[in-house]
Image (tube, rainbow, N blue to C red):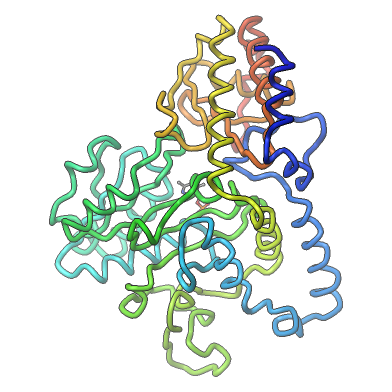
Amino acid sequence: MNFQDIQKLDAEDPLAHKKAEFDLPLDCIYLDGNSLGALPRAAKKRVTQVVTQQWGADLIKSWNCHQWIDLPLTVGEKIAPLIGAGQGQVICCDSISVNLFKLLCSALALQKGRHIVLSQNDNFPTDLYMVQGLSDLLGQQQCALRLCAGDNIEQSLNSDVAVLLLTQVNFRSGKIHDMQAITKLAHQHGILVIWDLAHSAGALPVELDQCHVDFAVGCGYKYLNGGPGAPAFIYVATRHQLAVTQPLSGWMGHSDPFSFSADYSGADGVNRYLCGTPAILSMSALDAALEVFADVDMQVIRSKSLRLAKLCLDLFAQFPALSALQLASPLNQEERGSQLAFSHPDAYAICQALIANKVICDFRAPNILRLGFTPLYTSFSDVWLAVTRLNQIVESKTYKAPAFMRQGKVT
Ligand SMILES: *Cc1c(COP(=O)(O)O)cnc(C)c1O
């Protein structure tokens, strides 16, 4: 395959025009949108507007006249179609960690007589930490974490388990769980399921309603491009909304916050999952960022994502030096999210050397190099250039320079 073939792929790409909707540095190849999405031009414009015209000029009136107060629900409704959720089930608020706390409490309270939360031993650590914290708070008799290996989930489902907490796409390997099959099996054992969609929402089609999912959380700053620390979202299936409670009973989740009543009475529906005042600046950025998805089909995004990854692997096969990197993602593309993971003993240094060569990707301990594909702004030429530079670095061993071994606080 030569560069002309690659340019042809870009010329025929139905999503090629979307790249212009992002404010990306010209000389940089960005393969880390799975960690922090790039900046949509619409988000940049909106934040300036919100700061100058709304906050600056209209001040507190903006809660009503610019509908700040409705923003958590407005943004939730914009995320809903991307994850196969009907109206009134998604709200934007807090972080995944905080939202998991709320949902774990909700789900455990619905499961009288059961107290086990089952999860996967290599789940994203914050998901496990939140269960551990809740366990410390409530005691092992009310909440206990049980872990199993990722390919041992089905065998671990039984009537002891109250809640199954899983991330659909593994953050290291990119391996996808079969949401429909696992949710169905869990329900057969009377288990409620919480799905973490951090690496799914905006990356691949998700069908929460169709899969009869009970609860879900997801991330605003990865594939949804809401900006660093963008608020997360929460999904609560309509059938659970009358019965659920959550303990972070802040005033924004009250049925009538401005009655200033001394007693808490939770709002109807998914609004009950709000706690404190929404972060309007970052939520506005996410709201604008979601406009990028208004005219695209998640199937088209998925199909390009798979082709980007296939090109990457085909190019790897062309360069003998790259056989030093072992694929740590499933070989079958249907089992992968929108990233490829490779293991190498010097993965950290290789990642740093790539970044120095203007290919931004990331490293995950202990030995994984992650290349993320974001079809809205990753081109086939980007993948070509990235793999070519990676080959130069690995073949010449320039990554062995001491400068590439230095670790920052964030990897
Ligand atoms: C990124 C990520 C998170 C982040 O959680 P926050 O509390 O929003 O920082 C959680 N879970 C998974 C699986 C992630 O990939």
